[in-house]
Length: 271
Image (cartoon, rainbow, N blue to C red; front, side):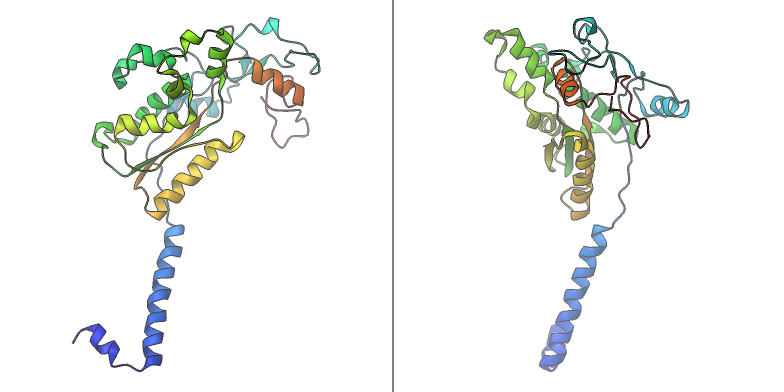
């Protein structure tokens, strides 16, 4: 006889006990899943100091390289904005920061994107495509084999400098059919999911300075709950215009030397 037949012959008290045992087993499984380890199988990155892959980033950290530089002229001319007085109207009280190079370069054809559409894309979206592809290569995962897979995308992204550039140009003719998708934060994750054909969750998260950390947290939760079985998680931030620097100066948040001194008695702002 089957188990259900046997249990039907038990007293109501014993049946209730068996039901509680089954429920406890299910609860134990749920709790165990919440603590399942998650493996990081690949990494892609771009950091100041020409740290454009995991190995060069590790070498930068190992050698104690200071990658903070004066604000490069291809962002804006710092001499037009610098003033050591943080209260000076329209001025920036710091000359330095962490900047990556060659942000204007993008192989649009590799991703099947037309030049006109690529021009309207926030460079942050372009970077995400490149670095995500490199992370998959680093993991030994064939990107063209992920179509229709339950792979999630979790991206931290807070900056909107590229849209400021369009606004400052004061030319409505620049806002073509690709403008809205080019600057939308939601498209940053959605475009990556679309190009790779992914069918897992796809989110862009903006929680300011913690955006990347929250993206990784949500990716881990999604993996443990079974929403996805692989996830791309990370963040991107490019400073393209002086506006945010001016605003942060007025808050008194910027360290005069452009360097973070976390947990240090000399801490005087961040870079």
